[in-house]
Length: 467
Ligand SMILES: Nc1ncnc2c1ncn2[C@@H]1O[C@H](COP(=O)(O)OP(=O)(O)O)[C@@H](O)[C@H]1O
Ligand SMILES: O=P(O)(O)O[C@H]1O[C@H](CO)[C@@H](O[C@H]2O[C@H](CO)[C@@H](O)[C@H](O)[C@H]2O)[C@H](O)[C@H]1O
Image 1 (cartoon, rainbow, N blue to C red):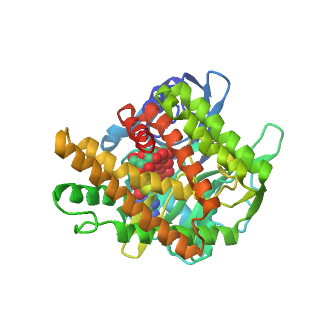
Image 2 (image 1 turned 120 degrees about the vertical axis):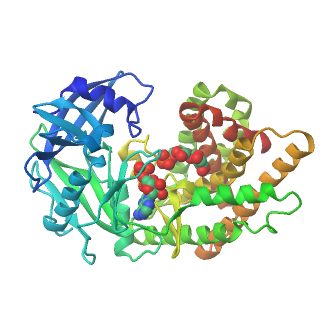
Image 3 (image 1 turned 45 degrees about the vertical axis):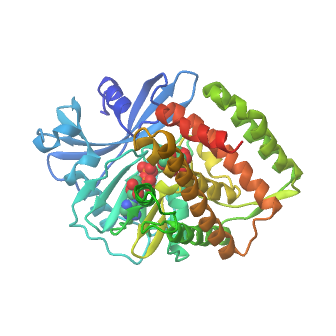
């Protein structure tokens, strides 16, 4: 029997990976889709799919890896989901015994990546050649605000268990595979992934990608944390400019620009690059205008900026067309890791709130550039906001320095990006970049209003200052 619904609803609602918070929903069903092989006596690790039905008719599926123990496990008290079927049931990602089974299955049961995943109803572990796993390594669950559950195996490998799953290709796996096989130095190498070929009601099978195993970047520092540290350093130096302080970030911003350009070039070489004609470019403007209209209902404070934003989107209609390709889709400093071997980019899933079909569509590379530039604007504003109140000269000084930091790093990043690709930030590129920046700032206003209302002032202040 799968998990009883009443035990699970409350548990899902409070999970940090649950994306339906604040919406009205019911748990329509839970289905067991597989068991991890080679479990010892007294333990069964089942993968179950929970069907979350929202009022209004849409449905999401969430993956629940559950450890069923015949005896209570005191060490896992914090991860207890409930008791049913004569078992004590825990969230398996917290449990080293369960995670060891996962790793062992990648080691012992994996098939070649080219093998078709056509065995219905079975878990299919795939491995890329060239790396031996350390199956003795202990697992540690990453904490933090994440959409999925990431588990490190010692300093050897990292497994991301996707929580919200959709039948079809998971872009995080597909892009990591292509970039790994292309020898990109800007991603963590993909080691493997787990698929399930699910039985559809019509008898056809559709693949659901459940997890991804990759290189653990052991020397990594989060790009967002590094940027905040650099801003704090500047704010602490009363008389020095951004280029004079020890914590200057511009060198890193430039290296990030080069890294993104190399990733874009690899993606363009291995995924289709298409030309969108003038009509399609006009449709892009219409889509951005539509997002603004929807955003105005959520954040009415956008209204004074609406005409100017519409003008920015409207200028896309002057273009003959644009080139689109596979992009990251949700790039910001928190998706970058600085390692001793340079910058790595993570999490190629796109914006988690977007439907999968939309996330797989090619887009302009300027979307990613705009994402990073918005992050350079965010960092000093976040530091200023959390540094406590400032008045008079100190407030002026802080906002001057914040603007200086953002402008310096934006310039360094853009210069390196365009130099690496041999492109110029000419009129056409400028029109595209402005439109994607405006689209992102509108998205951020909605994101902040829904998730961090205290931060909605950040995108709004950026709009105010650019008047
Ligand atoms: N290969 C890796 N090695 C070490 N840390 C990583 C690696 N990939 C991602 N991370 C870190 O793990 C966390 C979750 O990664 P991310 O891909 O953003 O997950 P999610 O999809 O849950 O948002 C982030 O803090 C990220 O910096
Ligand atoms: O990391 P996610 O894929 O979940 O992205 C979402 O959350 C981000 C915040 O964590 C959000 O990014 C915004 O805040 C960042 C600082 O926390 C800032 O660096 C980004 O520029 C800003 O957009 C992102 O938009 C959202 O999709």
